[in-house]
Length: 457
Image 1 (spheres, rainbow, N blue to C red):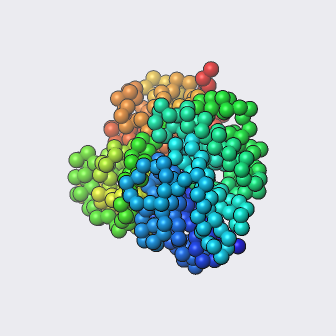
Image 2: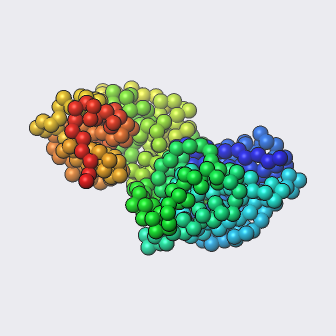
């Protein structure tokens, strides 16, 4: 008998896996916070004998090196990956006995495309494949994006993705469970698909890499659908190749109101983790809002200048601890300082909270068009192409900090697809002294509210 436990990393849209028999197991693509993987092994009563990476990750800091060090496990890394630490180099066809008593073997399958060295691992029980850990190769309905390594390699890697997907579909039984690392909201996925579980047979019927009429058609569609790449991805690959430092989740230093003010005056980032409703109602002037319950790590790491000190403001110690853990997954290891409570706890005597109004698309329709009213769309270009408010200005939220000077004078009504990114953008605008209204509404209601929605021809 075998088991496969899934370690969810929902904030980044990723999954890691623990698989094994009664005695020993392998951890595949573990996240930076390895305590959850260790706890999963303890619940199963198994020893982690192997840690396997499908590739050098571009979207998060791996916990593989530290997990192997702490457990004494062999660290399996594709042989083609250029890394600076000792590991067991894995080549196509290599077989690793995960649990001999259970007849479990891990077979390496070279699947270049997401990266040149990408390797999938088929889990075989007594010689029959029962699952395949596909990393960033074959995902649910799609494949991992091929443009994260080097622009000159993108088309070549896209063609390799097609070939790798067909290899997996051709060599593995239809009932083989497909267990990808990316594709659950991750920007490493070439497109966003729904679903939690799949098999080789299901992917043959629905995956764009396997249903396209030929490689040329697939490559053209894949390249045309690629979206923006989070800026922090540029730092993840080199960090993982060098070998990440051990994780430190001890609480950060406590910041009092004077220190918060001093850090703001020094140009550092002070990030309020509360929900957007609470932030709009009252916050420290100059602070930014990135909700802890949203894609905190993705958007904060995308927006903040890499390496800039950040102070976190949270409602509770638990919210702060969760945020610190999530940020560490993308290399923001140690907040400069932190404080818990609310604006009354974070402001100096005599200071009052800043605030700005929120509205809906119906509210916007009553004000637009009008002299001095600016509609700012902070969605990605691919979203805007499917429909946008006539006359609106477009600056994606991840570009806004460097393009604030492009926002026309007037009262800025800022919107996204659902409200979260609009709140982030509104906080950036508010901190720069602009008169802003955050549209906290779904974009599909814009037309119903009476606004003219156009699409690009």
